[in-house]
Image 1 (cartoon, rainbow, N blue to C red):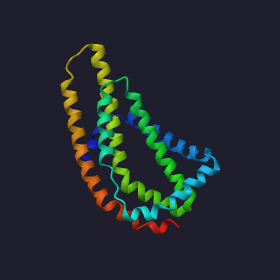
Image 2: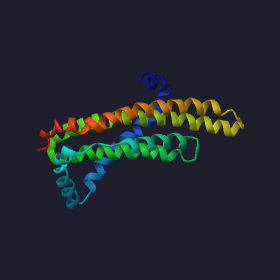
Image 3: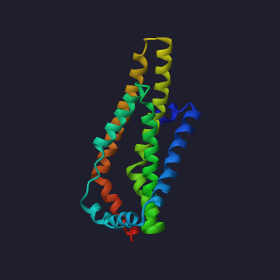
Image 4: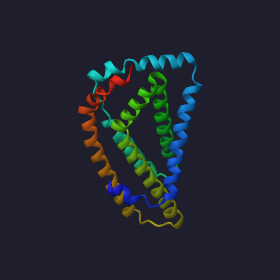
Length: 196
């Protein structure tokens, strides 16, 4: 976590990224309320199956997390595709806001508590790393633009530094994904009494 803490030096970029995420989060709420009643009912009914699904399921995020991390890293160096990285952060906000509101709608306050537990176990570390990677992407893209404008070919140092950071995050995330795979559903099952 020291790596993350010492790298967030530009507060303006961090505030911008948090704002994008929060706008997405609010949009997730709004999107739910805009859905037709029949769709909301179907979503709420499907949530009732979560208790039985948790009993036998293993939460597998290995492929998803690694692909997203690698894509964010390499899209940073394209410059022109950087807006897609920002959109992904917005999408994560929408997903989180939407999941919170559907749990609250289905199970009221106990559902909200469960969704918070679900978020902490399966998503919190991942989102922290996403923020860190996108923050670095901002810096990479800015550096790339300067390199292009100044026609400076000295790009290897920047690439190597951020590649090392990516590898460290992937290793940590893989270890955590192993933990989630074997114990995630078991831990979440302990709190299934909230879903009633």
